[in-house]
Length: 85
Image (cartoon, rainbow, N blue to C red; front, side):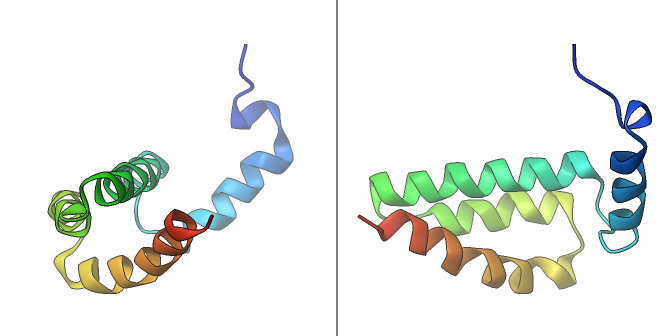
């Protein structure tokens, strides 16, 4: 059985504190992280298209003005993880 944030006071206060910095809900952030991983894997397997696909998904979930900066922040890290041996 999973504990809810209400069961752990520290976790509840941490999540409330982080909410002021993230305008997107936790479920959307987790979805974007999963999509970033999947599209990065697609780029590694096929060699093309992962970034474009991620931008298309992100356009449905977040404000348009934030698309390129957020993509630019996450892309290099995922590329680094993908190309490490």
